Amino acid sequence: MHLTDADIVLLLRGGLGRKRFQSAKNHLADCTECTERLAFVDRLPDFLREETPPLKSSLFEKAEDLVRPKRSNGSWLSNILVRGRVVVAGLAAVVVVVGVLLLTQEERTSRFRADTESQVSLMLMPLDGARVESRSSFYWSSVADAYAYRVEIFHAKGLSLWNTTLTDTSVSLPATVVFEPGSSYLWRVEALMPDTRIYRSEIQKFTYVQGGPR
Image (cartoon, rainbow, N blue to C red; front, side):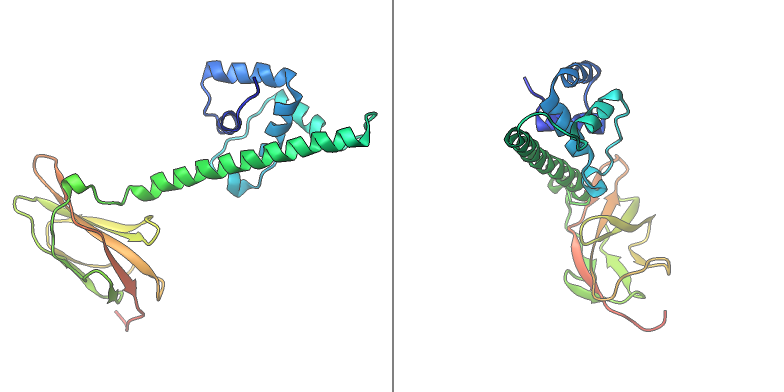
């Protein structure tokens, strides 16, 4: 049975277990088609193989020999059909790689979303959709028994930009926080409770506008 596209991606990413890796290695030693697919995926641009460690083995030497242009004693039609199968299999592998990267990105960006089970109603200022200057302060209502608050600002795609923990219910952004004029950002407040519970506010969106000197 041939390796699936997912198996090839996991093999390149070092995600196969020891037994599955040895089984895949044994299969590739005798399967020209799977070896060619492996070589195709390994030649993908770097942005499609982000965080994929290179697999150092003689398998790639064999793959290089298979895909390197060379004279063939077979018919030209047979060569075209073989190349066509490799291209189709390679395109399918691209789809799998892109899917894996999208899932990874989804895992990265989903961490900023509020957990509905621990969500609490807090009055946040600036309000959702407000226009904010870099010198603006951020305010929120207090939560009974909370011993501290964690404030975090995110890029629109969910990547963390800045955060701090304090006991007050307001904060002014430091000069190190740099916004792009006209860009949108997200922010929320977490109330830290003595029993280790964390209550999160809803996420608010604001747009940065160029302000005067701080």
